[in-house]
Image (cartoon, rainbow, N blue to C red):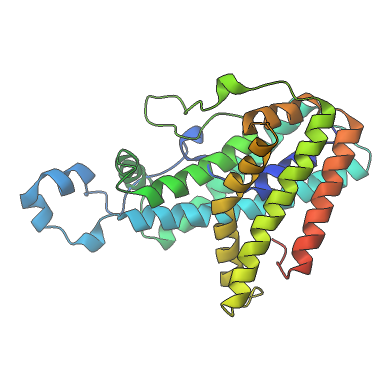
Length: 289
C-alpha cells in the first residue's frame, strides 16, 4: 500500500461529502409501498384520500441520508486508523487493491446499516428510491434533499474514485471540472495540502466557536453529530475556495494526490497535516469520531 493512502482517505473524509446511493444500486425508495409520488402531485382525487404522514416527505429523505452519512463517516474514520496501523507494521498493499478493499468495506458497512435506518424512518427501499428521484428532479424546490444526497454521493466518490455526484437514472454523473485538470508538481501539492487542511480546520473552528457561544455541549453525542453535519456542509466549499485562491482546482488537487501517491515525502507530509489537524480540533474540544 502506498504511504499516502491513509492520509488521502482521512483528507477527503475530513472534508465531509456525499454518495453511494446511486453508485452502488443497492439502495433506496418510499414510506408506504402503495404511494406513488406522481399520484400525490398529479391526481387530486387520490391525494385527498392519502394521509401525508403515510407518504415520504423531503424531510424524510434528508434525515435518512444525513444518518447514513454520519454512520459512514465513522466507518471511514475506523478504516483510516486500521490502514495507518498496517502501514506502521510495514505491510504493503497495491493502491488498486486497497481502493477495491475500501469500496467493498464501505458498501458492506452501508448494506449492514441501511435496513435499521430505513426501519427507523419507516420507509421501504423501493419507495424511498422513487421518492428521492422525484425530489431530485426539482432541485430548486427541494434544495435540502439535493444537498444531503450529493453530500453522501461525494463521500462514496472520494472513497472509490468513481464519479457519482449528480448521477440520475439512465444518466452519468455530472462531470464538473473534468476538462480543467492541470498537472500539479509535488512541491505545489505539498503547499496546496497545507492550505487545504488549514481551511478545513479554520472552518471547523468557526463552527465550534458558534456552538460554544450557543452554550452547546460538544461532548453530547447529538450535538457532536450536528457539529459533523454542519462541518460537512461547509468543508468542501472552504477547501475548494482555499485551493482556488492559489490557482489549483479541486480536481487537479485530487489528481495530484493520486499521481504522487507512491512518494514517501508526500505520504509523510499528509500524515503530519492530518495529525496537526486532529490535535488542533481536539484542543478546540471536538470529540473524536
